[in-house]
Amino acid sequence: MTTERLEEGTKAPTFTLPNQDGDKVKLTDFKGQKVIVYFFPAASTPGCTKEACDFNDNLNPLKAAGYTVIGISKDPIKKLKKFHTDQKLNFVLLSDESLEVHNLFGSYGAKVLYGRQYEGVLRSTFVIDEKGKITLPLYNVKATGHVAMLRKQLGI
Image 1 (tube, one colour):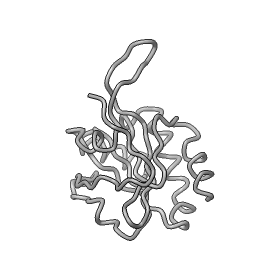
Image 2: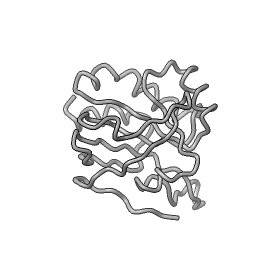
Image 3: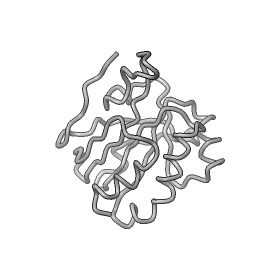
């Protein structure tokens, strides 16, 4: 299933998902705040660990600029909890095992690895403003260097 990509200026899809502790988190909980929502393929893999640690290491400047970071993956809560604890992450991770939210954001679809096409999570990041509009949709980002590139684009 290939989903439509979201564009700058569109309203971010609303969602409610469980976090690493099993508590429900809604995007609307952050109304009036700037949010960075990023989708990652799998907790505890090298690329996803690098990306999560980069976000964690950059939380202070992002928070100072008014941004809250949320990570979303298809991993079950238990796996996210272990990842969150092992990496000492200071931001919320949400579980979307059904891929419903991935599909709403266009973050699941056709990928190619070593010439083989398959369906999977598209590493992507969305910057959402205080009114719930997407100000920066980024698809197929690289795990390494992504946060530095994002900070540069946001002027942080």
